[in-house]
Length: 339
Image (tube, rainbow, N blue to C red; front, side):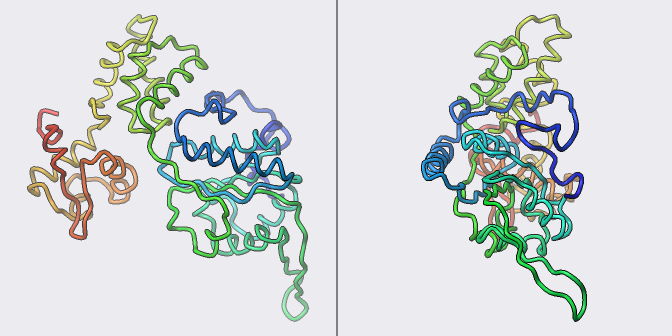
């Protein structure tokens, strides 16, 4: 097994990576479906699939979780392993460069284990093809020797469940995607679910947080738990320096104003995008290349980091001719220079 490919085995990390300090981020992750706020439909579907697999005493069908970054795909994979009571292996798609690396990894995992592959869309095509037979028949074909003496040997594998996470489902090939029997999309969280997440995180971190302060942070967290937890830490920094013993609505408003995050959860770049479309292109449409050049930002950054949330909130619409502002963005005054 190549060192560095498996980076975590749930319940016994020292078996692979050596003794590690406590990771606070891991402590924030729920360990059971009951502790996981939001994503109600996805969560309940997965609960049913897990219960059925346990009742049949069979491995869970392969799962792909997709959606924007920071919504909890890794956390859900850990919860699935916990609920199934099976070993959990974690690797990143780009870390597996050769089919031989993957073959060694698959040969070493335990019976009924869950193998989680983050950024699964970044697996190269040769590695992906090795997974075809591994996922369907729990075996892989290994070529031994070279040239005229080369021969193919089929190596059996212990049954396992593959759980893949991706932000780009369209980047998975059709044959690969069709082998995932369970396909679930995670959507942005609502404010109430994010408030619950923030209150739980504050309790884990020992941060005194009021309900109103939690809700104010939640509605500015772009529907993303990862952003909510990041804002919680930064607001606590401001509160600590200001001599506050508790995070209330006032210190949240002060801290987020210093971070340049407005009541809609938009930061400076978000507002630059909206104002540029409004003022320089009369509300659009404007092509993404032109927009990127005008604000001095990379095209990929706009498309992958900023635009999804602006579209989700209904501030920007995409069409064949480019991006345009919606009446909602204009009515809320987000495009005004005073923002």
